[in-house]
Each structure stands twice: as structure tokens, then as C-alpha cells.
Amino acid sequence: MDIKNNTANIVSVTRVFVAFAAIGLLYAETMPAYIASVVLTIIAFAMDGVDGYIARKYNQSSEWGSVLDIMGDRIVEASYWIAFAVMGWLNILFPIVCIARAFTTDGIRSVALSKGMTAFGEKSMQSTAWGKFICASKFMRISYAVAKVAAFVLIITAYIPDLNLEAANIIRIVAEILAWIAIIFCVVRAIPVVAESGKLFNDGK
Image (cartoon, rainbow, N blue to C red; front, side):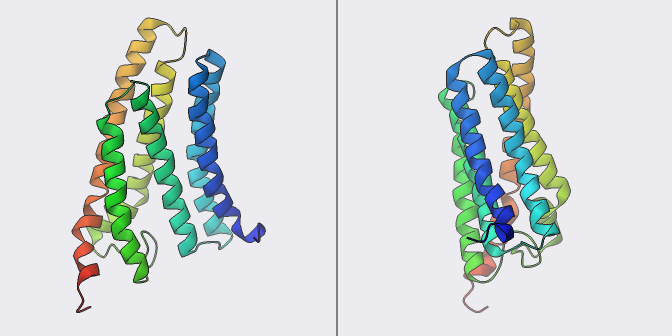
């Protein structure tokens, strides 16, 4: 593989393993491990912006890169929701909704890809202004990303071993509110994908 011309894709894949390391540290159940987990979580989500920046700056954008980026997002997000639910920190509905939404949107997008369309960019399957805004606008994408990373970081912080109980309870409440905001974003951003999917299955076009 040509590393120089695939830097963005390498970052997309690497961030998955950074997230796995962050989640793995939660089972150490020590303060240093949890602090390291918080740092790695921030890095993993920051890398999501880095791969896009590299792709645009060095002209490495491609359909394959788009697929890798979305795939990385799905794996990272679902892994955190599942881990938090398994540890009893969040309701099991969070990972269920996240995974159900991922299967739905990615199934539709796979059909779009077979017809030469992508999730984002010039060949985006979203043809309406509202669909493009909800799915692809910087405002929505950044807002969703910030809600997720803030929720994940605060959830981990709330359960740091030996953390002051009063502080932990306050952080936990804020984290759960942000988790709900993030999962609502998750669902809302799937609506245009489903709503505009009819054209993909119209044999007359």
C-alpha cells in the first residue's frame, strides 16, 4: 500500500484501535487507567477530524476513504455505547438504537454507493436542502461529534475510582443528559437517509 497517498485512510483505521485501547483501560479500574482512557477517547475523536483534513488538503478523498471514515465512526461509537451498557453505566437502549440506526443507514448507503453516490460530498445521495443540512452540514456533524465526545469523556470521568462522590454524581447527571442529546442526534441524522431512499429503488431511474 502507498502509505503517502493513504495517510487519511490510515488515520481512519488507527482511530478504531485507539478507541479500543481507551475502552480496554476501563477494565483496569484504577485512576491512572481511567485518566488515560479519557485522553485516548479525546484523541480518537480528534482523529476523526484529522483524517478529513488530510484527505481534503492532500487530495486523498475517495469513495473508499468515505466508506472507511463512516465504518470507523460506526465501530468507535458503537463500541463505547456497548461498553458503557455492559458496565451498567447506561441503559441498553443506547447501543441498541445506535446499532439499529447504523444498520439502517449503512444498508441504504450501500445501495447508493452501488449507484455511484456517496454519503457526503459532491456525489451525496441527499438531494434536498434539508437532507444535506442534517446529514452533511458542518454544524450538524460538529454538533453531533461534540455531543458524543463530551458524553463519553464525562461518563468515563464520572466513574473514575476514588473520585469525590458528590462531584461524580453531578458529572454523571450531565453526562447522561449529553448521552441523550447524542443519541437523539444519531436518530435525527438518519431521517433524511431513510426519507430520500425511495429514489434508489425506483427501477425507472
